Image 1 (tube, rainbow, N blue to C red):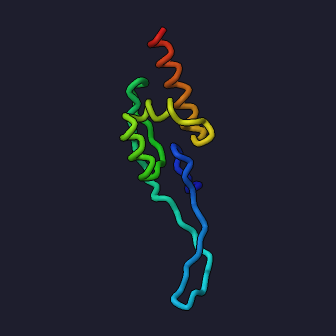
Image 2 (spheres, rainbow, N blue to C red; image 1 turned 60 degrees about the vertical axis):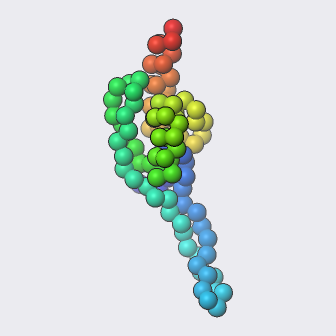
Image 3 (tube, rainbow, N blue to C red; image 1 turned 60 degrees about the horizontal axis):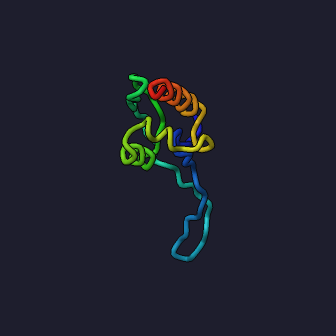
Length: 97
């Protein structure tokens, strides 16, 4: 299972551990991923996703999962999230028509 947020695309970063003697050794910085269940209001069902805590705060700030999916570009989203976005767009399109 890759360590990438399904909503924001945030993944691991590479950097250095720097000692007091200024020796540098490679290390990785991993995102704080959590398995969460988010509720889609338009689809009226819950969805399990692996999301970073930063992504979770962003979703809450925008006003929910449906709003986040509509506003986010497809390149950032995982395959599962893209399918969910398509379903939400269909549902919202039918409601508007």
